[in-house]
Length: 414
Length: 225
Image (cartoon, rainbow over the protein chains, first blue to last red):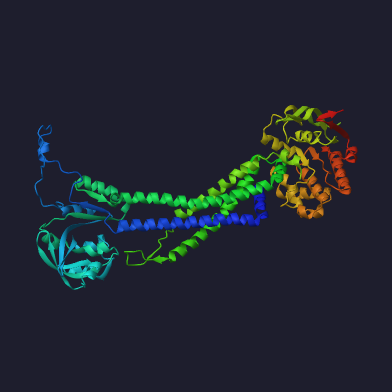
């Protein structure tokens, strides 16, 4: 075995209890670092997947990002007279030629798209007006592009395919109005059109507002109710690789002119909040390891103080200052490696324990588990950080030990 | 006449503190192979300081030291360490063995650092050295399991590990009883006379000094002729 390593191990083994305590510090530090990091990463991934999967990756709206330039402004570029309150002509809103746009999008690999027409409707029931957001979709696409099917409590999206007069409503609405599958409800649109739908399914997402106000039905029915035949006001797009949503959204917008919002753009504020959250989390868990690093600093400093004579004799023998430094840095490495080797399994234990915990946050009807992320980067970060901390903690005393002058010690004797 | 191994000229060593102290004043000295030199003098006269200078553990404020013809005062710390490793062996008043290592491991330490012999050869040579100081049976004992005399003899074996030309001993018998001291004295004499090495020993033990081939007496940092 390497001479320096041999000396380093002997030094550590000669102080079993002290070494064990500082090793324990690193083990606990690494364990908690790992457990907390994986919990935070897990919750972040969980959050993002909810964000990404529960809503379309790209939503194309029937509006323009910038207000259209009015013809009068175009005509008189260097205008002198100002016309105020110029209003555009009323037009039937909606995406023009949405079928071609959808077909074009469907041509691309890994991209699914469907047109929807969303409008407001009033459900008059027992003397109360309940405002409902009526989502008209092609029933066959609903399974593919929305999470409605996954959240179905009663019935299925297939029932909507077989019954074109069917409607799917939320669990909260049915609870409030004592409705059940098979009941009929009458909806009034803002155009004044009235239609009766049969409840074929009930969904429950856990979000009370959503479960109270959203309803899904065939796009044809909504088009008729809203007097917007052959129109759709949004196109929703899902992609196999959601990370490319931003690029595709920009491309679609450039091509069609309609405002296309990717999930990244829609949740920019949330994503930046997550970055801040990560910074805070890593700062806090790093503090745990920092404290552990002080333990290593302490033991190596103690060893160096006790080993002044040995250092002096080694130097008189012909050991270089850098040799002495190596010996003590190796000790830090040993404690670091030991701490990581036992700390990571300890962290895994903590993670398994955390996974057992379930709780029910307010507003959500199903108990949820602590989301734990088992991917490799956390293990690597925790291990590398602890190892570097251990080496740094040993470097300072090692440097001091290397500076010991043999004459000063030997002259003193004993 | 053996070759001059070490040549010291006009060595001065001063300590710069609040009061400037001169430990060694204008010391000029030759050390020859096969010779057992004793440095004597009253306490605080600068004996040990001179020895540390000759042993390249300390650097003179002025003057020169040539070891086997090489000027050492201009060498840097690493070169001096390399010099000490191969050319010099040290014995101190206290054995300064590494407490976690057995006698044999302590003796092997300089050999391992030098790395010129294989581990097997190091062990064989280490055993041979221990045998020469009468400690063959104690080879696998830790320093705390041996007596003071045995530890000091182990330290001598360690000083000889890399076959150095010069052995520097600082009060090697200062901490031993009469019997153990006599043994150590004899070993040191043998080292000088049989192997052609130079042994320089600082002592204030008169009987020890009398056995030396040559005496260098130092008073107030100055060598007296």
